[in-house]
Length: 116
Image (cartoon, rainbow, N blue to C red; front, side, top):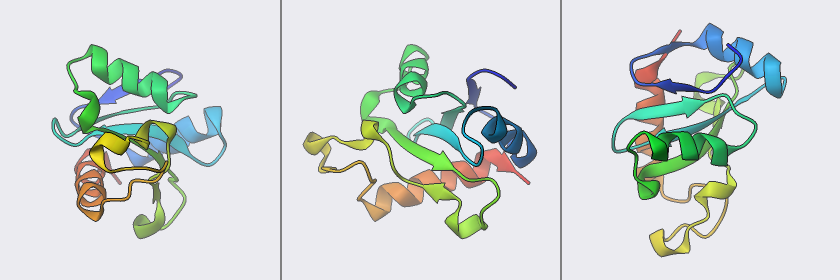
């Protein structure tokens, strides 16, 4: 588990624990494609994960950067903060995902892909 992974089916939360210790200690960076319902995890930059997904058929407007804290409680383990989220043309003017609708889509994809 030492490189970026595109999650199309599932990933164990234990794998996210391992990834978190390898780079940042307590979290894993991720980018979720809310349209294709996949995500990429485990890189130093959200932009690197975004690039991998774009190279694999995703559209930029569907990609949202998050941080996953595997040790946190389930309702607090997703942080919606990334530079790739700044996109005024889509109505998101900050690093945070401002739309509750998009946050809900992100939560649904993460819940579908991450197995306890």
